[in-house]
Image 1: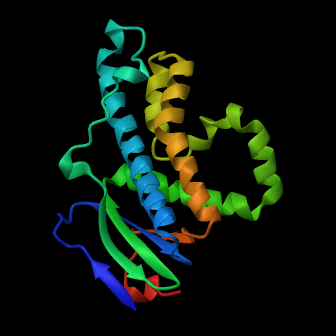
Image 2: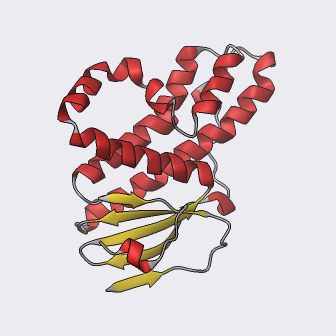
Length: 198
């Protein structure tokens, strides 16, 4: 087994380990890594911008998507910690807690929905009505509830969640369907090598 470690980064980050059944073309791998980073950055920006909205909402009606802060500080960037290049293998990424948890929850949920084709077909039909509901059990649900509690426009909440969170996460489902993502390992448990072997 070939494993490449990247250990020059701080250990205060949370880990997301993604099991993979296969590698892919260079184009697929670049797309996969870009989509993971976009999903992570989107959740991070969503959470950061909630604080701005909550503190300034009394002064304005809403905060348009165009003026939201999208800069990711160096210490908050998603880090590639380890890669196991084999079939099956894994990708180990590190980043801030909530974006890592949101990605993990989304991937686990997508895996379960994929197993139940009828549910998935029903969900596709009702997607527009359920976009916010899909996130009710996720790590950003409390942020959505905060916005709703101050009377922030539901359409603005929906647009922000869709743009920053849902669309980037949905791109990950393509990689899951193409078996570049097989499963995710919960970092709350020991990440021993035996746990990563499958």
